[in-house]
Image 1 (tube, rainbow, N blue to C red):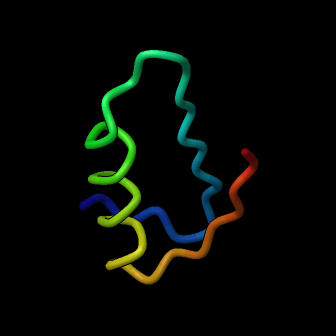
Image 2 (cartoon, rainbow, N blue to C red):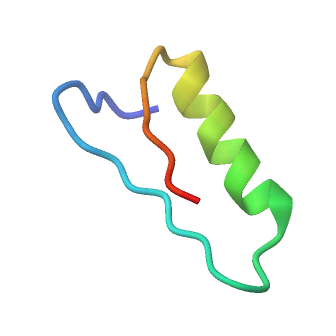
Length: 40
């Protein structure tokens, strides 16, 4: 994974997205030690 230190990352999901399209990138970011906020 590219170094994203100091960067902000946004994951957008809309109606009809597949669960894995959200969970896989989110897990990789968490595994890399990134914190995030979620808005539902």
